[in-house]
Length: 288
Ligand code: ADP
Ligand code: FRU
Image (cartoon, rainbow, N blue to C red):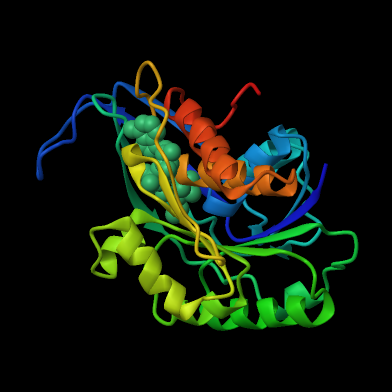
C-alpha cells in the first residue's frame, strides 16, 4: 500500500436533508441533520485510507471547538496531520449544505475566513518515502510553487491535481500535473457542454498530463497523454441517497487503481463504481 500526501482543505459540513429544494424566501423543515468533516482533499484521503493506504494531510487546522470533530474524524481514519499548519486563532471553514432527499443533489454555501496552506509550510514536509502527491486546485500562486518544489526535489513522484472550481489563474497549475482530475462544473464554467471537446481543449494546455473529467450520472471521461479516449458509465445505486463527496470518492478510486498498476480504462471503472456506491449512502464510511 502507498503513502499518499494530500494538500488541501478540511471543512465543517452542516448537512440539512430536505424533502425537495426550497423556493427562495420560504421556510422549510429539515428532515435530518448531520454535522461532519468535509473538504475535497480530506474526503479523498479518507476514502484512500479505507482502501488501505497510509495518508498524510497537509492543510490548515485551527485550535477551536469546531475543529475537534475534524481532528477526531481524521484520527479515526488514521490520517497523519503532522504536515499541517496549526493556528491558535481563526475559524474552521464551514459549508452549509442542503441535501435534497428526492434526488440526492447537494447545494453548498461555503464560508471561509482562514489563511491558506503556504509554500513555506510545504517546504518543511519530508517528501522522501511518499508515493503520490494529490493537490486541491486552489491558492494558485502558492500551489504552483509547491508543485515546482516537488518536481525539483522529487521528480519521479506522481502529482495529481483536482480542478473543481474556476478560479483566477487556475490554468497555471496544469503544466505541473501528471494527472488532472477535472469537474463538470469547471468544464461548463469554461464554456463546454461536451466532455471530450473539453478534454481536447485542456490537452492543449497540459499535453504531459493524463486527463479525467467527472460527469455526474453520465460517469467519467478520460483522455490519456498518449491520446486514448476513455469513458466509464456511472454505477447508479439502488437508491440515490447523497452525492456530496462523489467527485472526491471518484478521485480516490482512480488514484488507488493507478497506484495498483491498473490501466486507465479500469481506473475510471474502479472510480465510478466506488463513487456510485458512495451515492447510495450517507457520508464516506464506505464499508470496503
Ligand atoms: P462532484 O461530486 O464533484 O459534483 P460529480 O457529480 O461529477 O462530482 O460525480 C462524480 C462521480 O460520482 C461521477 O463520475 C459518477 O461516477 C458518480 N456519480 C455522480 N452522480 C451519480 C449518480 N446520480 N448515480 C451514480 N453515480 C453518480
Ligand atoms: C464535497 C466538499 C464538502 C465541502 C465542500 C468544499 O466535495 O468537499 O465536503 O464542504 O466540498 O468545497
